[in-house]
Image (cartoon, rainbow, N blue to C red):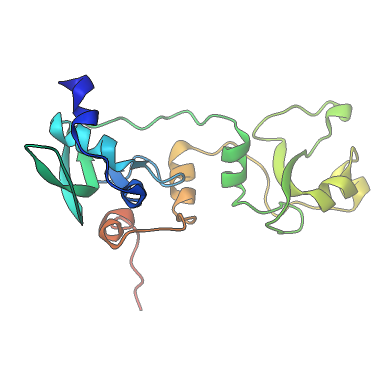
Amino acid sequence: MDGDFRTEFVREPGALKNHPALVLNADYRPLSYYPLSLWPWQDAVKAAWLDRVAIVAEYDEVVRSPSTEIRIPSVVVLKDYVKPQKRVAFTRFNLFLRDEFCCQYCGATGDLTFDHVVPRAAGGITSWENVVAACSKCNLKKGSKSLHRAGMSLRKPPRRPSAEELRNMGRKFPPNHLHHSWMDYLYWDSELDQT
């Protein structure tokens, strides 16, 4: 059944591929915020059919097989809790996310690269504590000089983020498209304004 399920449903026109499902952990929090944990609608339907997820919200559109009609899931929740990773991988993406996608010297948000605060030529290592997001202009200006010699300063000192910090940081950068059925699940544990 597992292998046949995906092809059992009639593939509708291309519009249906634009109906991703928000995937929530068993505690009703997204598996990740940035990138937002989304599945193609086909995977969401398959997981529901295999009883691995519960459907908590649906699109108006349906898919059909000869014997079944199902509304496309827009929000699914895993039946088994997936423990979030504790260790944060040191990647360019995670570094930019930690630094909120802005240059740590001038605050610019475009044309980002990364820079070693203590230059490698001076013994600086590639680590969370020594690498920051930098725009090309600032990176070129600093070159292989120390901050002091380049006359530059950091907006905040670089440090290793926790997995929870990166998850929370990701909430500040929602994707371009957020379906209205997702909103109750994306920010329900955010602190409310007390005005």
